[in-house]
Length: 435
Image (cartoon, rainbow, N blue to C red):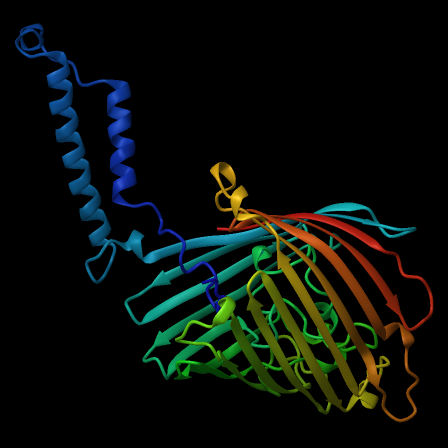
């Protein structure tokens, strides 16, 4: 039965460990076979079959190398185990080609290249990290970016109670925390996750998480808050994220619940359902390195989301409402209320009869998604609404999975806003992978 993956705070936890003793031994054996053995006297060579002598020398060299690698590994690991086996490496990336009508740019973009590194200190303390490069080049003018998007420690105490400390993904919506290219439909992430719930959005802080029951999971955190002076009329709260050293002057509090109605039992037609809800509250007088802007007020977000599969059909959707207290004092045309939602349906049409040979692990999904979001949903008294903040978008396309972790994508997007002007329609192509 196909299942909807749970939110993965370390998305490559099943990746293979760094090659260890076996790989080193195999390489050494190959080198010895190619290069030959040390020379001996003519009498010794006559006394022994050359093939037999080479096998004996090879066995001795492999045994010596294996012993030495064991000694090195154990010497570097405080608990006596091999330090190499404690690492997990992974990552993901995506390359996009975007074409638009009129003046919209036609471009190819190495949009993201991400490296994941994890380490197990022991069976209950684990480290996870994610470092990302965007747009292939980083400079003051390129628009590229390199950032640490995750760097946190998990202290696994029990099923019910665990502790997380560091930089983690803010637990709102779907794509915000399940953003690897094979995990979502379409070349670009939904626009909802740019203007309503910024993705990727990380927070620096501490919290607890666990399972209240087999079908019910929770997370609760306190973390650095947002910079309200960077909110604006069209982009909403996106600019308020602090990506370097966020202030703790006006912290954020957040909590999330997830419910799995079919957990622990098989449902008819392979049904799988996950329902999530998040509440987020943050002060907005925060700045980088504690240089707070003096902005009074706060931000409150209430959001719900779901993922549902039945037979070959997949559905997902998210809704969010944001309330900004102090919007009029911020200026910049900032709204006092922001609202958005989207709904998506997909059909997995790849015939089972085609899943043979090189296509044995392939699949294909055709999908359609509708988004409706407004960063000017409610305005403070006396502030005029900017109609460019009210947008809708249709996206239809196909994902072809060459393997489970490598996907080719194509889609067509039609977008409109409240200005009444025609926005360019877009054609997008992309490749995405995860390892």
